[in-house]
Length: 204
Image 1 (cartoon, rainbow, N blue to C red):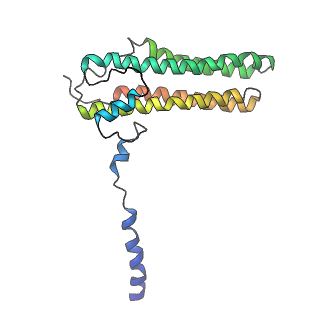
Image 2: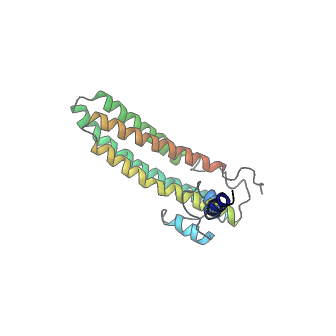
Image 3: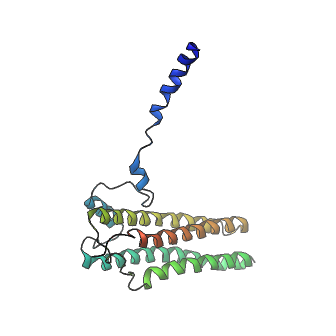
């Protein structure tokens, strides 16, 4: 029995190294998709790198402008993705793939719905963030969340490139468009969730 206890001792000692589990920072990062910037200035700089002339969310009077800038850049980027789908209609039509045409059209309409939400929703802003009190921690979190959203836009370029490369093969085209549609839906959900980042915070 003693020898069994001694043999088991190393096994008992092997579990403490595996307990760097309480890495709590990673638990708060999933919403952003990025590591925490560490300060409000770094977080602002990171987001501003995606948005020329970004006003920032610190001052209440700038929040509507900044949100509109963010949505305008997203709308422009997604419009470019949509524009790359349109030229594929002719070669697919000449190839006689009616299914392919319908799928391209469907994907384009899904992108257009997101683009319209970015461009035409009450100047791109529903007053969500000026109804709550935002301190530095909340503003930093919003910068990080939005930087995560902006960084996801690069995935659309990859997805539409895959669609272009698959245009001559109906099966590959269907799979590539399904991935683009899934990306569009996930992006839309992620942007919608942004409105609820600060649910429960006190109003000014």
